[in-house]
Image (cartoon, rainbow, N blue to C red; front, side, top):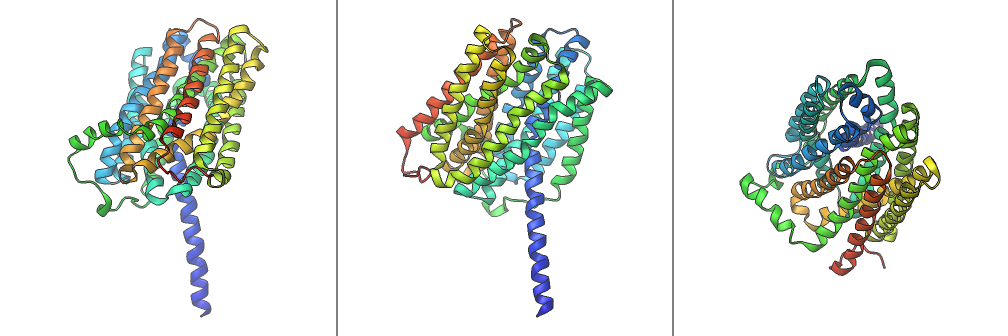
Length: 413
C-alpha cells in the first residue's frame, strides 16, 4: 500500500508538471504574433535610416506581416481539422524560422516587407492552432479561463519584447533582432514535439480541403459568430494602430529614448495581464458576454480620449500614454471572451472557426496599421482617429450580441 500511495503522488505530480509545460508551450505559440512584432518596435526608426525608407514605408513591415498572418490562418485552420494539430504547427514554425533568417538578410525595405509576409505565414500556424488546441481540451467557462491564463502568461513576451529588442539593437543592430527570432523559432520547434496530439483521428474531418475552405462562406451567414468576431476584430485594428504608430509618436514626435519606449509600452502589457487575471476569475460569475461588453466600452471611451489628445496635444506625451494604457488593458476583457464565444458557436470545426476569427482580427490589424502608414504626417493624429473608430466599432459589435442571444448560457442573469 505505501508503494501504491507513493506512486499515486508521483503520478499526480507528473500530471501537474505536464499541464504546466503544456500551458507554457501553448502560451509561446499564442504569443508568436506579439513576439514577432513587439521585439523589433524599438528598431523601426533605425531600420528606416539603414534602408533609406520613410516612416510610413517602415510601418508597412507591420502591415505586411499582418497580411501573411491573416491569410496563413485561413490555410492552417482547415488543414488542422483534417490532419491534426501538431504536424501543421511544426511545419508553420519551420516556415517562420526561414522567414526570420531572410528578414535578417534583407537589403531593401521592399524585400524586408516580403520576408515579413513569409515569416507571418509560418507564425500564424502557432497562434491559430494553439486556440484550437484549447478548444480541443476545454469547454465553456473553462475555455475562457484557460484562454485568459494563456494570454496572461503570453503577455510576458510583449512586456519584455521592446526592452529586449532595444538591448539587441544597441549590441548587434536591427538585423540581430531577426536572428534572435529565428533562435526562438528553433527552440519552439523542439518544444512542440513534447506535446501530445489534441485532435484524435476519430474527431477529424476527412472532406476535401477545397470543400473545407468553401465552408468559410457558411460562417459569414452566422450573425452571432460575426458579432463575436467583429468585437475582437475592431479592437485588434486599434491595437495594431497603437503598435505601428507609437514608436514614431513617442520616439520621433515626443523624443522618447528607444529604451524608455520599451518601458512605456510594457506598462500597457501589465494592464493586459491584470485584466486577463480578472477575466479568468469573473467571467463564469458575471457572464462572458457582459465582460465583453464592459471591455469594448472601455476601449471605445479610451480610444476617444486618445483621439482628443492626439488632435489637440492635450497632456503632451502623457495625454497619449494614459488613455493608451486604458485602451490596451481592455484586451483582457475582449480577446478571450470574443474568441471563446466564437468557438462555442461551432465547436465541431474549432480549427476553421479559430482561423476565421484570427484572420478577421489580424485583417483588421492590416487596415489599422496600414491607415497609419498611408496617412502618416509626422504627428500622432492619424493614429488617434484610427484608435477611436476601432474602439467604437468593437463596442457596437458587442452590443449586437444582445440582438442574437439565442439562449446562450454565457450571459448570467
